[in-house]
Image 1 (tube, rainbow, N blue to C red):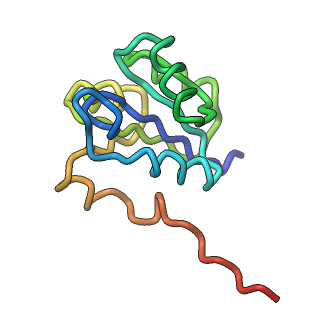
Image 2 (cartoon, rainbow, N blue to C red):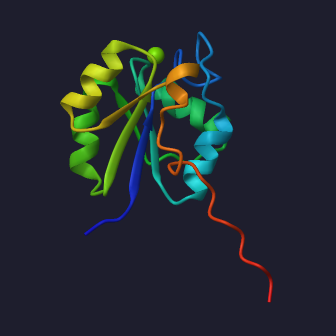
Length: 127
Ligand SMILES: [Mg+2]
């Protein structure tokens, strides 16, 4: 059984590099990668746009899909938990429909995200 966490990011209105910019820093995507999560984007932007974006940011994502394709992502990647982070009701609609937990990317809702989700594990003391 997979114990991996999968996190899907909307782009526009969600990521700081979106148009309009959202509250989610690219650093958070890097943190998710560092934590070993499966990471990717799910956006109305064409796949080629999504791929170019990640390439420009030097982040090797696991998937890039159109908004209504989250169920495909779930089918492709066994994971213990699935999250989609987005800024609109459309994100919420597709996320919950595909069996993802929806995390809204605005400042008040950000405080309600599970705090452990992006918590870096404590550094081990050097011995
Ligand atoms: Mg959006």
